[in-house]
Length: 435
Image 1 (cartoon, rainbow, N blue to C red):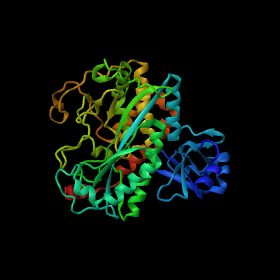
Image 2 (image 1 turned 90 degrees about the vertical axis):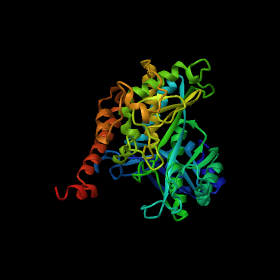
Image 3 (image 1 turned 90 degrees about the horizontal axis):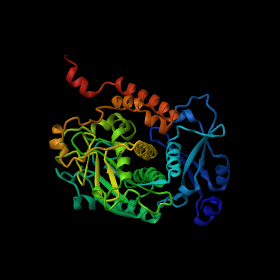
Image 4 (image 1 turned 45 degrees about the vertical axis):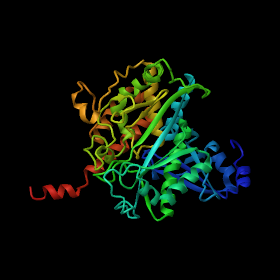
């Protein structure tokens, strides 16, 4: 696969290739190239105007070229004449340093030099809505505790199984699909892999879910908090670090606390150290902060973190240790850029290893009920602006993720915050029109 996309196209009946990249805001961009031109795309890249997407460029910048990575090829199961390719961005003969996939690539290369390889799995929650996005698509899905509701799950059997069948065909090894904690909300799990592979699949999964939902007359959203009274869309990440060959799990220590090694706790220490700052990329929208630190939802719990803490097999914490050899990060939400999600975890974790950071003591309490009793407990940011300011002050993240990325991301996200602040909401008019 790595070298001859021309032959692959002929053998698999691929007529067109989507040459895609994700910009800093997580938007999937693409050009559709006929298979007859794929060799040219491999050599030169598909051309884009960088200013037209969220990459912090101007109309004066040179052409942007997306060179596809053959290893990322995914043949669309529901439209097999089309192949999807993740691409790396080039300009003036150089890689674009602020491009999200390149940000992750730098982290994986740094880890490899240290003899490490991070493997991850993600849990991508989403809602199935009416086509206008105004309501959940199933009017009968009304239980106050709808999680795992078999009837509601089976009423969406056709779309859920088509998505799962596609993952099976792609070799992702999906193993379960369920109705989640909010009415109209679902989750589908597939096997973990190398963090770059997981990031590419995460990008494609979001596109696939939206495309297949549309095919069934529905609309899918990964928005962090589309309904104020319902649980939001998280994107939990299960993390482990292996040797460079990917054969030995270096997080696993049968003699370690909860089956985790010293390396694992140092890695976790780095994440705990930078968690409030990482929220800027793990929770990247204004809406994200209506999911974390949120009041109780219809089901009785938000399932989202409200402080920087970790515990054992306890879902009230930001980090859960469900099993030996791995931990689950529960901070991220559905808006997180798949590449920046992985890059942020790896960057902070490597910083923790380099500085032998201590994550502190595990808290074996219900954070929703007892968190206020813990002294000196660090809190998560209350809004996007606080998160951006914290991110800007974090030297470890700036050095690790790169000044080019950090400066561009912060610039564009501050513009987004300012745009939000310039808008007038219905709440403001309802509550202050007669003040």
